[in-house]
Length: 312
Image 1 (cartoon, helix red, strand yellow):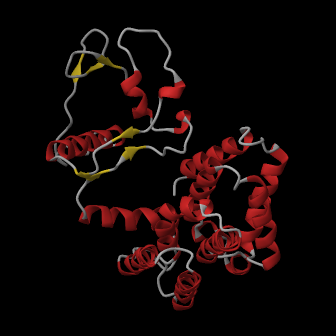
Image 2: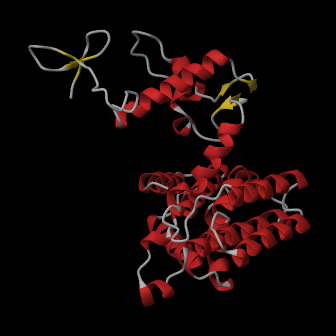
Image 3: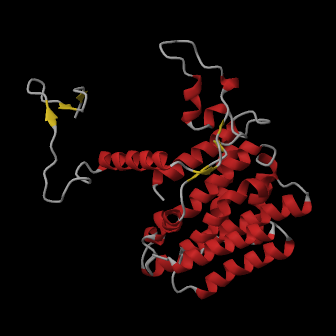
């Protein structure tokens, strides 16, 4: 996973902790959490797990927004672990491998769900982590020639099924994600590709096999207005008006769930292809064809289709 993605997830989680929801968490305490989490990922001892879990129980579970931000941060952190960053020879042997770090994150999540759902009968943590579990498990299982590691992942799912962490249907979906990760595994023995593509490879392959579907709503109704997708602001914008938008009116747009119209699918695909040209202007041209641009003779600026200047 790209460094900016983990940075965004970390900043979002920190922002949720700094808000009075219900009370702000001091920055020193936030730094302590990252220290505790680093200890868990490196050495998954009962003491490290308990210390990190107690911090989360004290500062996170009181707020649904914080739980969601934590879930997304842990998913991003897990995907960011890579053996490519490890040292060599003796030093590399002393460092915790990427697959073990990802497994340790799952152990922490498992303990959090057990404490909140099984012991305290509070389903908020389990419900907010559920949408990300398939990706977390598939990325953890996406390593070649690691049968012992894979058995640990499967044993964890067996415990979840036995203790009824989730419904049988939800557990089966996670198992299918693990199996898909094994079948379509593109991770090399050196695990150089495991960091940024462990989740995206599985998701991309599965996304190509299923039709586009419209979600029930655009955004999470539990998030504040400033964390919702920007598209939710469009319906409140009045043309040629300087009147500010009332934040209380900004809610996730409700959509008609189901199969998407073919024209909309074509428009989305066309848009995504155009986005690709931002990073590779010749991507849509023939390999032997030089891209053509309309250039203003006076200013030497590139012009778009409507003769507007596009500054280089």
